[in-house]
Image (tube, rainbow, N blue to C red; front, side, top):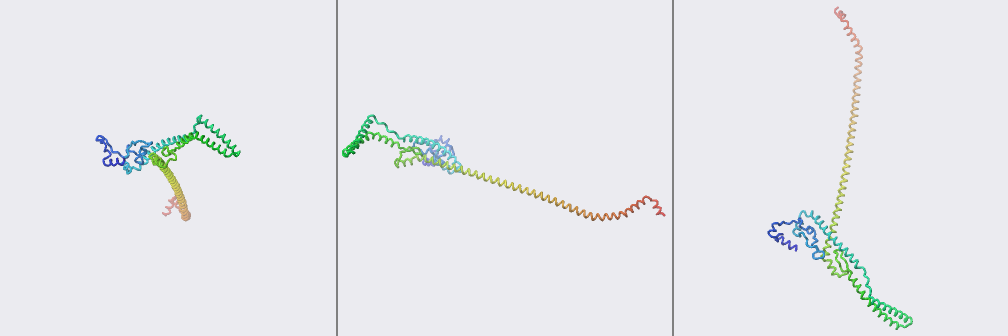
Length: 346
């Protein structure tokens, strides 16, 4: 049916059945519209699984279109929408399975009640009296058989045993119909419950009927639903585990990066301290070198000064003696100018 509809849509357009008035308000449908069934797009629609079964969900209220599904599969947004559609389908399927499991539990309880052994109904008063008379006769005959056997009267004992067998047959016939009825009821109640779809089955039924059930729509449909739920949960758990491992790897990488940064800063700080310490050492060394140089220059200056100063002292000492006389002579001349002038004039 879907293939025929798709062929007509391709040949005549999706609006082939619309009137002119309806065509005016017609809008081309895209696969991402709300009217389109995302379940059908990504996997299967549960409404299609149980048609004409006891679990029939009715027609799907949304659009199922093979052309839209093909467009979805070719769309660059396909991978982004698949998780969304699968999550929605999983929620819908889980609700179906929850409802089914409730029916399965009720079915188990019903079977448990039916399997309990049913006590046979009591005999009527008339049959009870007949049964008592037969049992009394059988008891008396057995006592006689025993006595005859002890007396060696074998033929008579065998004749009485045949009467005992006849009475036992009457006793069995008296109770057999009731037992047969109970046995028949027990056989009718040997039922089994399908854990997949919740259907009741006849235990140890013919292989053909069992195969017919296994390949039926309801069993196959619920099998698909349960398989999808398990598959989705497994994939989700795997994705969560991979995400957790990825977070752990990222955290480990960040931790290693922090350790590297810390080690780099530690080495940088150590290098800076060493560099500053070297600068301080160099500065101190230069200070000592400059001080030693100053001392050396001062020492050399003192030595030159000592050498030059010694000669100057001797010169001054020598000149000091003569110089003293010269200063005295000059001073005397300045004090007696007339005398000197008189001497020069005479």
